[in-house]
Image (cartoon, rainbow over the protein chains, first blue to last red):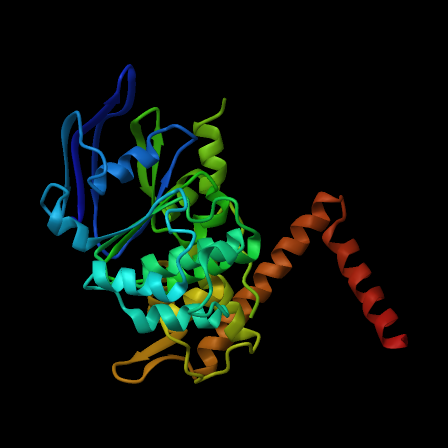
Length: 231
Length: 124
């Protein structure tokens, strides 16, 4: 059972080939790192999976279907940029998620927020950057989705926040769902990943398990990445 | 328990070694019930599938065992724990000897030094 499949998937923006004939299968129960330098196509791939962009070639399938109404109920997406309305209170955000997503577990979200002392009356604009990132992640991870697409969930946060975010991902691990984490901060996420996908200039250059790389190359994925992408 | 991972080895094999070391050194007691895979994964900061794989391997080696309804336990077979402990000790001695020989000491010299160290220890 494949939850995300790409067949010869391509995306072109004018003269720029953002994705070039990508073939990929992602199975449930795995935590996958989508790793590549800046501008390699990570965000484009995740946006295509969400139906926010349409392919210029090939296809992308979520649980066997092109992104659309049904896929939106299966996919929980954390964009790489802040997207929550500044003026909203936590309570309104919870209402919003509850209205939009049938699989949103409000109690679970509330419990995680309270553990961080984030109250229902707190407004987004009153939050620090780290608290915003944590709040967004909690909302996204509180859905009972089949596929979580997290675009740079640990970009620009302090080490304690980063640990919290990775902890939350492990805590919510579900053998029936896949989690894709896009990042270039490999050393930080390596231990929580099952598999890695290296992407460069719109092409998949490697798909492997973390322990295969460590076992065969006798180096960490981070070290191996630096070797593959040496400038 | 403190978890440390080296970068040049698979994570699952390091989990096996560290849990085993925890068992022989008493961080995990014989017969003790282990936390759930997810909790152990969270504590070590690793992927739950990797922790699961390590525990399955430890089960095959007889260091832990599963009971269908009540979870996973550390073995209470002291012979198994004793063997594992002995293997750790042998490994320590081997790497010590290799390091000393690299420095140019012969086995005889090493033994003498160890004995001297031992008497020094007795006197203090």
